[in-house]
Each structure stands twice: as C-alpha cells, then as structure tokens.
Amino acid sequence: MAKTAQQFFTLKTGIPTDMLTAQMRALPADLRERAFWSAGVESAELLAGLRGIISKTQRSEISMADAHMEMGFLLERTDYRAAPGTELKNLYSYRRQKVLLETNLAAAAGYEQRVKAMQDLDMWPAWELARRRYSRAPRDWEGIWTSAGGKVFDGGRMAALVTDNIWYAVNKFGVNYPPFDFGSGMGVEPVPRDEAVEMGLLSDADTVEPDFDTPTINSDLAAGIDADEATWREVLDNFKGFAERKGGTLLFTDPNGTKPYHPAQLANLIDEQLPEGFDNLQRGAVVQWTCDHTKITGNPDGDDAEHFRRFVSRTIPKRESNLCRGLSFATEAERNAFIKKINNKNELRLDNAFSSFSRSPSTAAQYADKKPFGVLVYMRESFNGKDISPSVRKFYPKNKSEDEIVFGYGTALKVLEDGIENVGGKEFRRLIVSEIGRGQA
Image 1: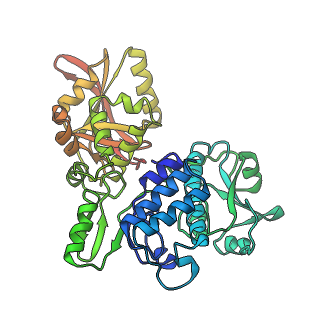
Image 2 (image 1 turned 180 degrees about the horizontal axis):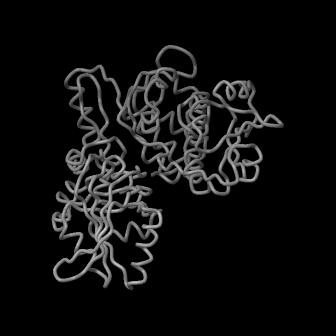
Image 3 (image 1 turned 45 degrees about the vertical axis):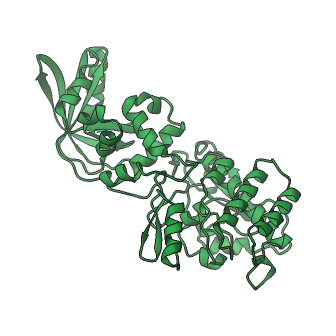
C-alpha cells in the first residue's frame, strides 16, 4: 500500500488518452488512480514529464512558479498541440496547469490522509465533510450529501464513518478520500469517537473495522486503444509485465496490485520482467515469507507485510480438504490453556494476519515438534484458503514440500473432534476442524 503522498505519485502510470473528464469517470476508479491522466493529452512522453513535475512539486523541490515554467518547456519539447476547445483543454493555459497541479497534489494528500485514518479508527472513527478553503462558486454540498444518502446533523454538520461508502458517492473522481471535485475547497475533518457516538454513527460497544485496500487495482482496470499493429507493439513493449492485449483493449495485469488470479497464473505473473524502475514487490515478499515468515509477522506495518497481504488477497481461493497445521508450546500448561479456550467455544479462530496450513502431514508434524508440547490440527474442509505453493515452488524450491495454504485473520474453524495422536513415537494433541467462517486475507 502506498503510505505517503510521494509513494502515491510513484505508483501512478501515465496512460495516453483523449478522453475528457466526464468520459474518464466512466472508467473504473482504480484506473484513474493508477493512470496519471490529463484530458486531451495523447503523448506518453508528455504524461511522464507532467508526472515528474508534479512529483517534484509535491516534494517541495520546485515552486509552483517553477512548475509552470517547466510545463511550458515540456510542451515545447514534446511538440504539444492543444486540441480545439475551452481553455481548460489547453495545457499551455495557466488555469489548466493550475488545476492539474493542485488537483493531483490534493489527491496525494487525501490518499495519505485515508491511509493514516485506517490506523486511528478507535479514536477517530468518522469524518466530517467540511469546507477547507473559500470557493468563488461553491456547490450545493449539503444537497450532494443528502442525495447520496448522507445525514445532516445539528449545525449543518455532514458526517459519516470513515469506512462508509458515501465518500465514494460524493466524490466526482469516484474514490473515497479528498479532493471531492475540481477546486471545490471541500475536505474532511476527523470526528472523535465520543462525538461520533453522540451523533449515532456508532454505539459505545461498536468497533469500526479498518479497510486496508485504499484503493487498489482490480480486474476492471483497462483502456481501449484504437491503434495500428505497429503502435500496439510499441505500447505493449512500454507496458511489458504490466499489461496484455485482448482485442482492442489493453488489460492491466499489474504484478504489484490486487487483480485476482488463480495460484499458478499468479506465480507466472509476478515473475514477469517489468519496465526499468519497477520491481516485483510481491515476488520479493513471497520469498521473504517462505524464508523467514517472522520478518513479516514481526513487522505487520512493514512494506513486505503489505505486499504479501496483497499477494494473498488476490489469490483466488478454492475448496480444499485434509489440510493440516502443527502448533507447539513450551509447557503443557500453555497447551492445555489453548485447548481449553477452544473447547469452551467449540471453535478455533485464526487470530494471526496469516495462518499457514499444509497438504503435507509430515510438514505439520515437523512444526508441532518444534517445542515439547505439540498440537496437530486437521482441517477436513475449507473454502477460503489461498494456495501459495505454486509461487513458493517457483521462487524458493527449497520449501516446495510444504505445499502451503494461507488463511486470513478471523477465519473460524469448528472443532469436530479432540483427541490424541502418536507420530514417530511422540504423542500429540489432535484437533479435527472444519472451516465455518471467512477471514480477511
């Protein structure tokens, strides 16, 4: 996940297009996220140059005045010719440049604001739509808010939980964070928990679960291209590893994103050679996980953990039977406490971000034998497991025998049987379970 405004810009991809704003809104929101578009501009070189100027402005390396000057030089260097129409279609226009710079800088700041908000939902579970600066022609935001199903509270306050879909509904760009329209002057203010409870947005006992996919590429990411074969060859070469052609449509595969794939397809995808300057981040995370998963579980907020979470999330699950997992405890008291907790609820809930099972009983026995007191868990049926074994075999064949299936946080397993099993002369506690709940991997 891009966690800063700078990372947000780094992730964007310039995609030439002659679509104007209204047409761009018809494309999936995630395409607009990734595609650094500019209405009426067709040159990929020009888009890449504009992206660089905005990134430098965001990093405070150049001033707004210098950014305008660099845009002028860029337009001359790329032999840009404005399409006929209004001033806002002409990139030589100071007004057009100002809109482009300010909107994209605000989008980066809004993206970062929502990412941080996901970490503070206990204290600040809601946002208030609020005016951040004066607008010469203010829109009817209360009308927009109520038309989208929002509630207006005392004092004209427009508030909703940070995770509410209304933030998509009121946003012209189809995302769930500011800015909400070109030059609108509207932003969000965090609402503390006690105020949110007073407003009735949640109760004292409620918790707001974070949504860490903020936002990501999905299976609808595509762009129609009307071009000859020579142009298509050039386009595909420029996007190698990121896109494939289906008829007249460029479909984005994005090895670092979230478009779903079957396990074997995903292993091939994240092995693709990418354009210069891009890394296969999910491939690196898979190798890190299988080499030493504690580097990921021990740093759940780290980049590798996020890349691995995306990799697991996008893996299409399938029904499995006869999976197994080994757990081990230093003392018998610890193991007994674990078993007692499960038997009290007749349920085992996976409370780690990622929990691994295997198709190999011998692998499970090895893990159960790491400490003196082991537990073997046999899963008779599952439907939410993510098979990462094709990628492990491809990138770290040393561990191919583990045949690993990963489950996400919150997966619930019903205990069918509790007994004893002897493996290789050693006695283990045995649990037979079946999946009854879907996790969040």
